Length: 498
Image (cartoon, rainbow, N blue to C red; front, top):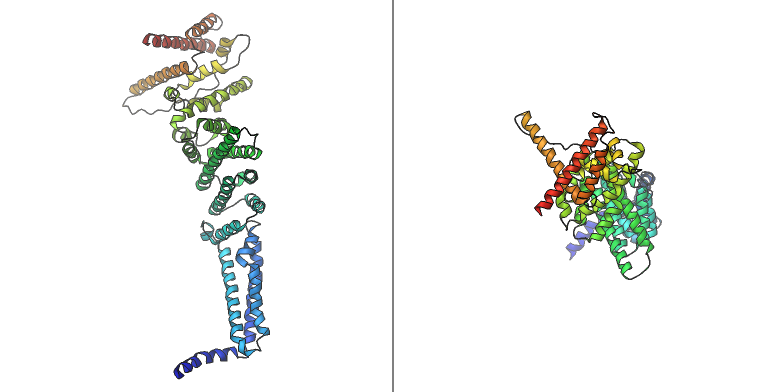
C-alpha cells in the first residue's frame, strides 16, 4: 500500500508543481489571447470567401458553431478568475485544456473548409464543404427557408462540376420527398426557381444531365398518374398538379435543346427510351407531343451532332418505315409520324413566303423516313402539303420546285471498278424510289387511289404545250408524269397479287 502512495506521489508531484507555478496563469491567458488573435481574422476571411450566401450560415452553424465557441472562450478565461482556489486548480486547468482543444478543432475544421478552395479538394464530390452543406440542408425543416437557399444557389454560376453534382443530387432528393408527400404547390416553386437559372447549369456534364433528366421523367409520370386519378374521381383540375406538369414540360424542353447543343443527346434518348418502357400509350403520346417531337424537329438540323443523333442515338424503331408503320405494337413511331404531319404543313406555308431552301424540313423529312429516296419523297410531300390557289395545283408544283429533298444517302462501295460502283448506286436509288412509292401508297392511300392518280396525270398532260421543251418546268412536268405512272403500276400489280 505504501508503495502505491509513493507511486502516486511521484506522478502527481510534478503536476502540482506545474499547477502552482506563478507563470501558469499568464501562460494560460497568453494561449487564450493567441487563439483569439488567430481565430478572429480567420472567421472574417471564411465569411468573405463563400460561394453562396447561405455558406455563411453553414460556416456559423457547422464550422464555427458560434454557441459552443462562446462557451469554449468563456472556459478558457473563466478559470483564471478562480485560480486562487488551489484545491480546484486541477479541475479548472482541465476545463481550460478542453476548451483549448475545442477551439483548435474549430481551427482545423476552418482549414478543411478553406482547403476545398484548392483543386484537389474542390473536385472531390464528398469534400468537407459538401458534407457540411448537406448536413445543414438536412437539418432545415422549414421548406420556405430551403426555397430561399435554393434560389440563392441556382442564381450562381458554379465552377466546380462535383460541387454542382452534389447540389443537384441534394435538390433532387428534396423534390423526391415533396412529390412523395403530394406537396406539389412547393414542387412548382422549387422547379420554377431552378428553371429561371437553368442556363447557368452545367448540362453538358453527363452526370448532372443524366441524374436530373431521369428524375424529371419520373416526376412527369407521377404527375400524370395523379392527374388521371383526379379525373377518374370526377374532381376539378388540381392547380398545383397542372402547374407542376407545365414547369416539368418546360424543363424537359430545355434539356432537349441542351442535349442537341452540348453533346448529351445519347443520354437524352437513352433515358427517354428506358423511361417509356411499360408506360401506357396515352402517357407516352402526351409526353412526346407536349415537349419533345416539335422541339426536336425545329432544332435537330442545327445540332453539330445531327448525323450521330439520327444514326446512333435516335432509336431505329422510332423512325417511320413500312415495317414500323405496319407493326401495330410500335406506337412510338406512329406518334412521331403524326407529329411530323402536324408540324410539316407550317413549313410549307413559310416556304410560300420565302421560297428558300428549308434546311430543317430537309433534314427531318430525310432522316425520320430512312427508307425513302429524299428527292422523290420531297416532291410527293410538296404535292400533298403545299397550298395552292385557283385549282392550279399541278401548275404550282411544276413552276416552283420542292424547297427540300436535296440530302443524299451516303454510301460507300468497296468495288474494284467505277462501273461496278455506279451500277450498284443506280440499283440502290431505284430500290429507294420503289420503297418511297410503297410507303406513300400506304401512308396516303386516300390521296393516291388509281382514279385520283389518273386525274393528276390528265391535268399534267393538259399542260404539255405550256412550257418550252428544254425548260426546267417541262422537265419537272415529265418527272411528275413518270412518278404518278409508276404509282399506278404499283397499285395495279398489287391488285393482281391479291
